[in-house]
Length: 193
Ligand code: IMP
Image (cartoon, rainbow, N blue to C red; front, side, top):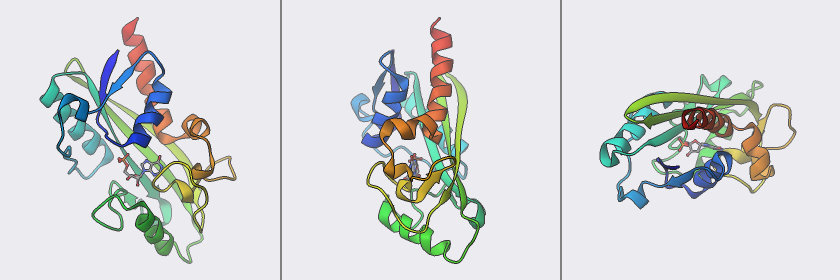
């Protein structure tokens, strides 16, 4: 089954393809002729995922899904949250975001944080939402080379390594996105029967 995933981020694409398995072929917006940045101007993860999925559906008329993820840090009242990509700058500057997060957590004892992903699927014109959460904490220095974004700072509950020190398989098994995508897969498989 072919399905459009609203991302041109190669890391996310391969993470999600690994969880979806061989029964599904992911197609990117670019492959469907959607070259422009897809708008995400909502103030919630749900709103952004939904906005991106509806945008693609209107452009292509095909089944599609979009995700939006935020890192929610307890001591920062849920920041950076929906602003995770542009926390420090206007672009997707992962190193600057990580530096700012460490600075804002300086001196704070509570390092609890979670990643939350929301997926909006538009299937035959109807929207379905799926959520995945992983709890953990933020360490005080970057560690590890794998993954992307805040991975070098985030240690998931039950582990003593950051996401950036895990293989893609290990991360997918517990990650926010892995959990949300598995819910999506369960739904799509049930529909195929
Ligand atoms: P997006 O909505 O998936 O594009 O995520 C927004 C921002 O959250 C990204 O630019 C990253 O900074 C961060 N982020 C999302 N997923 C992850 C992840 O799996 N690990 C680390 N950071 C992530």
